[in-house]
Length: 500
Image 1 (cartoon, rainbow, N blue to C red):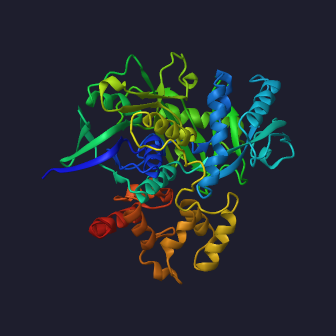
Image 2 (cartoon, one colour; image 1 turned 45 degrees about the horizontal axis):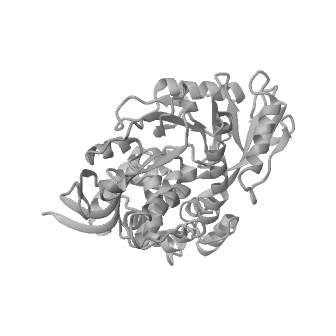
Image 3 (cartoon, helix red, strand yellow; image 1 turned 135 degrees about the horizontal axis):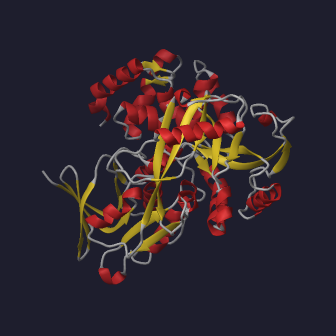
């Protein structure tokens, strides 16, 4: 049986750019449908380094406009999502023989002053022989620089944008792939798995690494524009240091990498930059990349690691505009929005490139373009101040919210309440309801994951498998045993009908 749906805007791709565009469009009154072939944030958008940052290294490639745009977005995103976006201080140790000290300080001066920084702390020079951030490092590091950026739960950023879009009337369809696009006189006819057909006034191609494949479905060429697929891999190891600072490290080959406190008990190390030539269905960190990141960390940390210490690795493919750069890390992180000519008929807007930090501004720019062709579409942006779900509390109020949550639910440990607030913010109260004891929350699957939370993830966040919950909605997969994972999967299978 075929199902046909009319909408104003159909978005193909449930990554960060598609989610941001869907939210913005729904908030301007459009009837929106989002098609995502897999789970939400299944690819690049859940495989980043988890940073909201200007891109300090992009200054070396003279991408001043991109850095300025990104820096301006940091505090905006922090203000609308203070539960999943957190200020973070990064320590950049000076190492003789690499970038000179004056160049590092000049770059950080620009970083502090070109992006409208207001709430984040400015750069300062550190004596690593005395500072806490110097203690885990090998002897010999004397000078470092501490600067500010933000950390983010990338997959939850996608989910919350789509949740807000849905709350504003959008229809979100994960595990639903577009299979055909035909331009009609009055719009687009889009076929999808499950025998569904959609009639849309306009289509947004936010396919990420598959953007050219979506154009192929529509039988549209890219006018010579080429994409460069660059794989970024990360490793997670047991915690290498006990403080809250992160590190920005240089390597002799000119590359950089980060070491970041992660999920309380771990350290996240990444990323690599390697051209990806394999299928998009098989994206993983290879053995050479894992060894490379271990060797990089061992240049700096006194505590040495090896590949067998890695508890988890992940990789994502960045869909970058091919600007002819020789080295993958030099390829531009900027984006391009390509709107089909009016003479061709119904609008098709394709998104090439982009990065997590600029998704909101990209979406605003996309709607401005579409407003030229969709009569009645508001040209007034709104997403710079409207909080994402759960984020309606002060920018620096997350710690106070954790205290409120523990006071209301005294059975929560400190670590448990921190995880809930950093995932859900104010939505914690909707999830835990009037629970007075742990037993009130239904089945406890382990490590603070209760039936109440799983119910929320299945009914409000489109989760349908244990992997969805343990690796994208949360990162509890780092703690769950195989037996606990199997028990969760079995419970989900038995209760899917209740969540539909």
